[in-house]
Image (cartoon, rainbow, N blue to C red; front, side):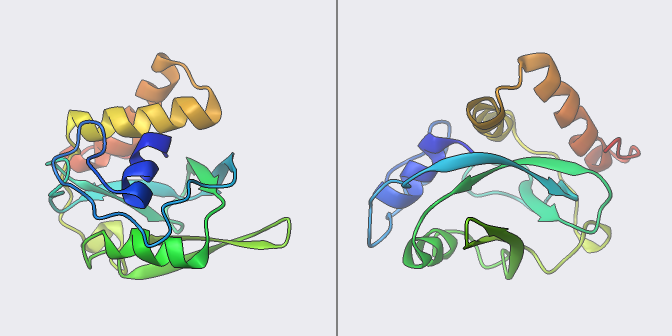
Length: 162
């Protein structure tokens, strides 16, 4: 979501609030454009992030709800290089549709929420996601917090709100 986070994947370096230095992509060119999108389904947090601590975000289109997201126009090579900088648990490529004749893709886990070890995300990770939501969708702090309350509640054993 965050443009600074994506820049660390493409140009190399540490994302604001992160703990890991990324090697960058073979082509360090920043995206030609980006746009806000809303995806059917929702995110959940599981496992342990080596970059942020706490749970990693995964997208699951089968969980009822909606997910604010951001589409970046990058090359297929850049997509592969970004994915290669993530742990192998992001083992599923999802096709999200077509926009202006361009396929939209993301990656997530083959595991769904019901078979994952849920783990709440760290505050720095949520702040990075919030930055991206603000940049892409223009949401205010209260709206972002309400969204986070819904998607993180399942990590603490509560019912999901989204």
